[in-house]
Amino acid sequence: MTRRHTRVGPLAATDARAPRLDVDALIDDSAVGIIVCCGSGGVGKTTTSAAVALRAAERGRRVVVVTIDPARRLAQAMGIERLDNTPRPVTGLDLSRGGGLDAMMLDMKSTFDEVVISQTTPEKAAQILENPFYVALSTSFAGTQEYMAMEKLGQIHRAARKDGSYDLIVVDTPPSRSALDFLDAPERLSSFLDGRFIRLLLTPAKGPARLMSAGLGLITNALTKIVGAQVLRDMQTFVAAFDTLFGGFRQRAQQTYRLLQADGTAFLVVAAPEPDALREAAYFTERLEADRMPLAGLVVNRASQQPESTMSAEEAMAAAARLNGEASVTAALLRLHSDRARMVASEARLISRFATGHPDVPMTVVPALPSDVHDLDGLRQVGALLASG
Image (tube, rainbow, N blue to C red):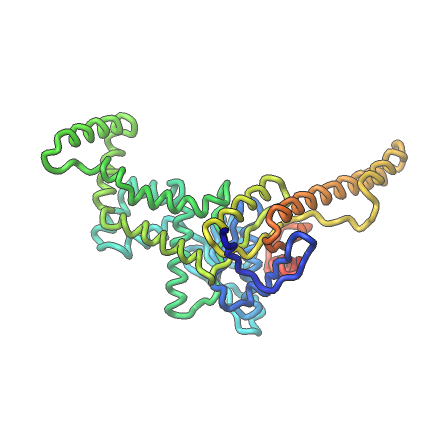
């Protein structure tokens, strides 16, 4: 039987099925050094990661939050003019308990360049960095962003262990279509870079193996027709220059993967109260368990709030119908109440279905705010809701 590998603090039951996720116990636990906020795109991972990082800092942790957010909302919310590949301090915090907060935005090409420069000679690095195939690979190849997110996590973790600059790293994972891309894409990229097939395909045959040479010649001719002679030459030049780094990429990916499995790491799966998002959260939860990665719990984000009135959706619609065109404003409000009550009931059924299928996964439900989060006070509000959900 597979043992569930879960990292949680003290729990209190939210209902008969799902234990409550105690966010404050999680961020206060000094044994937790990495929190990874993951989930499918558009569910509020960036806001959640920023709110967790801010709350942890104001509770005494020395935190860096790493975001991968093309909209750059995190910089605006944290009052930083710009975010880049270097952690920058966030000001305006209550640091009476001795914490601190830095924020950075992943630049995948700069991170890729840093790896190349650190792992080879200046001459070889210049040859790689100027290669057109490398430029395309480092900016748009599928999986590069996810790989570099893990690479940057590894860099910060190694540096923090040496200088003690941070005791908590919060990672906002890339806005992928599927949450599983974060775990799968780095392996795909490192397999490509370290693959025997690409070496065989692009390295001329050695020795008297005429048959192999003839076979490679046929493959090369076919590739030339498909991608063009110049692209193929760029690929060949890139592989020749990159040769000494191939093995290192897979090794580094494996090291960071083991870091994600360590007891000091905690995964927060973020989802919206929608069928697709919760289905994706279920897949990811099961994958984390299968890969023996420490799951802290599920954050159900942007949930509809229960109407203050106890009138049911059916009663509200019936009352609106009885008005029969009179008092149109009142009828409209009754219909709005009915729609909202139905939405709350639908979301509750979806959340209950997830809890029934995953009864051991701690959960917190965060209600939707009336407006977008755009400053530190908004992030504090989200953090408070995370802790009390």
